[in-house]
Length: 293
Image (cartoon, rainbow, N blue to C red; front, side, top):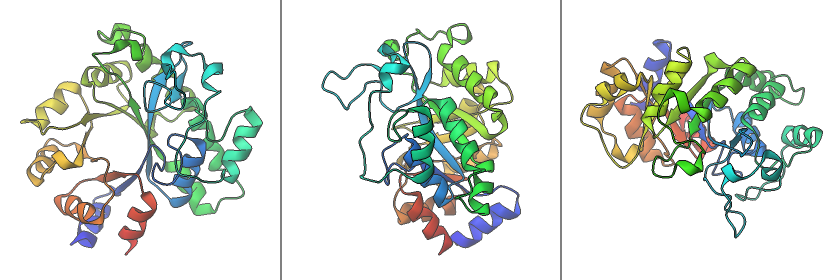
């Protein structure tokens, strides 16, 4: 059944998307160059990553609003980029991967530190031409989709630094769009958020940029209308709040479904049978191996 579902999707011209969550969170420190290289080596279709702004308005890749590695737990938004550079991300113990090590050393970075969004784009571009990678790996990197999550928390606007009221105050959104445009990857990028207002603002600022709505701990009554109101292209729910009827709603609306964060084969099989278009996972190595089998 699973093989038939994936085969049908390929015949329809839409490859099943294996998305590395925060790079490859189950295999390496999250949102780091090392994690991104491991995900690329494995052959993911897309990489999901999280964005906050520094005090000097640089988009950096970090999940939490605070730096958890130190007792003071400063807000990312309270630190300059130079200060953010001083922190290292903890996670699964792994040696620095070859390209991440070289790329970081050439720029005075830590391969397991906090990179900027622009550095992620530059890193993947360098990967796509790296002699140490196979031709298949290089080609996959050229087609990689960047799925950028904007970490807005409406109750705590200080985590971003601007009280979001729409397109006019969209500092985070503007910085992310500028980085995407500067890298020339707008056709390979999408922006997602739990704050659906900022997803709409992104679409207003950059109509060609794909967007997605994140959902946690609920299953909306009318998913199609919700997607339409935000002008979103993707529905990205917590997989535990998804069923076959909800998937059908999204497909009927002409949109795509990529649930998160799914790490077990039994769940993969059920979701694919329902017709999801991809899966976000901490363990892309296991998902890719399972799909091959």
